[in-house]
Length: 195
Figure 1 (tube, rainbow, N blue to C red):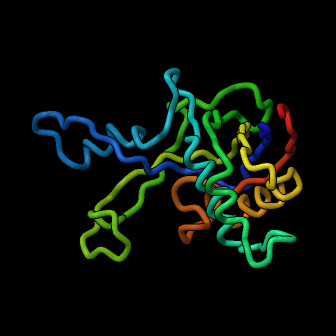
Figure 2: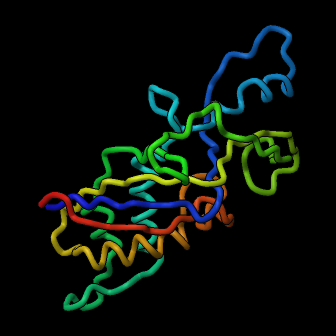
């Protein structure tokens, strides 16, 4: 078992679409409600720092292993998908930092809104559309800590998959895996910090 620390940097905007529940004020219109609450779609910690959830990181890695479909050398037709699904664990979120210095967390209050005319039921191709606003940031950096429990997944294999995931899968709303182009990232460094 080993822990791998990955320094990531966004190569495209990042946008959230988290489900949230907030009480509507008496007499408040749907438009006014959306205007007041849209930032609630962000994932944040207790200090309102923006983040990418641990499961988003895990799913990104699991998805790329299935997408690439690489065979494990010396194991016949076995592929990396099941190894990544069962053999990786992510317990901590990626706290997002400004691109310039990498030491100042990005706060929820700093996001800009992207207004879109989207299906009311949230399903692609829906006939009834409504205006919704999605939080977005243009640039970010962050650190992912991934626990690798399957010793068959070496650093070289892990890094190859992570780099491909940054281009082909991505994070959050409108990512490449969901017909978009947000949430892409590059890998600045990958290192084992604990075995």
